[in-house]
Image (cartoon, rainbow, N blue to C red):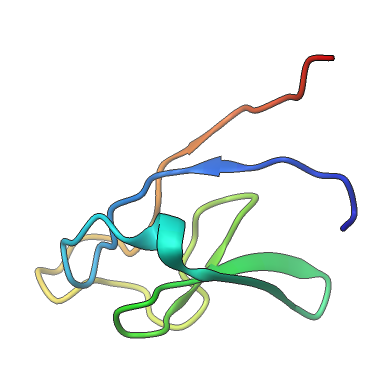
Length: 73
């Protein structure tokens, strides 16, 4: 709604499934987030950081890769 475009990894670091494209979009305060459809963790769309847990079950950081994105007319 704010007119921003974000590009993040589709792989959920908690389940290993490629499902984040099916997640719910929303916000936590002023932070735009995508909620994983598997276990419902919220990820900041700007940074990829998980707002709920710091590490995935395998001990790796719970962070999605992010890429710059823009809309071209």
